[in-house]
Length: 589
Picture 1 (cartoon, rainbow, N blue to C red):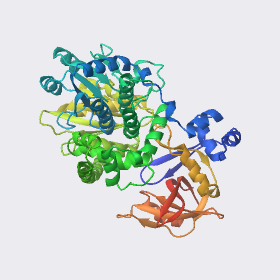
Picture 2 (picture 1 turned 180 degrees about the horizontal axis):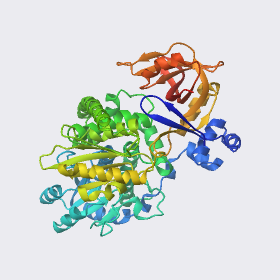
Picture 3 (picture 1 turned 135 degrees about the horizontal axis):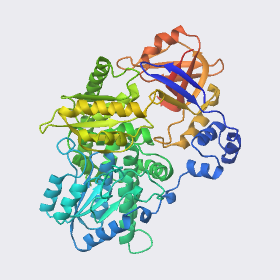
Picture 4 (picture 1 turned 90 degrees about the vertical axis):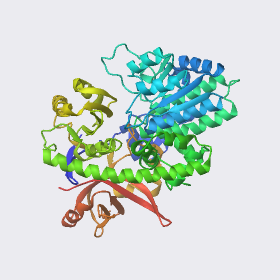
């Protein structure tokens, strides 16, 4: 594949352009679509009409039967026993959107079935990730007899043993990877529900919310009197697809296969969702009456839900998603909106500090393969988001650490680049750590402050041994080269059939060579960070927006011709609708 290089700021990107495939024309004819859309499907590994049709028109009936989820049948039996015996059940979930939505699904389903059920969400800063001993002791003393985890627990060996000693039965539902040296293979529990426990389970990339959704579905089927779900349970499970879709998208799992089916249906159902908390969340975000996509979840709704755990306590977000009161729901949603605004301000401040540290420490040197930063004044709830932005800017595996702690333990959040498994890397350096967990692209650690420097050195050494120069060059994958005239309203609308977009199914990107300005570019945004421009190839002109490309204004004026990479979209402004390109990169010869 041809490679070319461009600069849109400090980061050099390599363009990787997929070659035109001769099968695209026949596939387009079979599917009655454009050749460009067929080319994108082929790029995603879809080469025949049957698979293409299933991808473009996913159906809820294609979801995998819940009974096939590994461990779910044992879990259903224990839940049914708890319901029959009127035992107290507590659902223990993670504080991120994946955990919040999964807890909300299970709690509401069990309430509909008449269970004595409560939920527990650990405090992100005070308790940290996972199943902790203090919480288990408290819950056992409060009379809980069955504890169901959501999005955590598969590595909680000591906590599981404690629960057993206290007479608290444990059902673990999780999707995270287990450290390879873990012995025994699984924590002590009545049931462990986890997609990776059986290698032939079709959806190894299930999010925590998906696992919880499958358990809820299996329980509903088991306790419904006939072949079909009770009407009330059926309506709830359809609403629950929207919650599970939010958790799945927010957790950045692969949006193909079953995950695509669930998120596609859940997104379509989201505007009509009858849960008052979801309605309030959508209204507070200013999205009422609009069709929602994965961008709206990832960048509008999920950050509001996450703000509860990042800036305060995530239990509030579960209350929102499970509330029956429209008034209370709107109060919480508006509060979370304000919390998210504060989070954004804090995030920008920490990001600016981190970038300065990287430059001062030389962590952006080409020979460096990782970034590990620590500061006593960084907010633990925000450092994970900042780590993601650092990866975007410097394209290195990044760990951000809040070094301040009353008990001597610092907390860190890590984010990775494709092809570099964070959990494996952190495990290789785990002699320095107190706890750690996560998966390939995101992880968390706790570490004694005096060990941070040694951990950083070992992590860098591991990265150097497992990454070469090509691995840490940011890549822009382009689906096809095309002329501007190919992107009319019908064509761009057709491309939306490829959504929802996300991990494993990115929004398609295209490139056009040798375009020029059709008029002077204009810097926009409060700080002039963004750039509006119109490009032409001499036949067609298209308006473009380049986010964080304001600094390119002068260079564009100096060059007659340049190349652009972009994602086409339909833009509506003041009742006017047209095709607009969101620029992904600009290349100069």
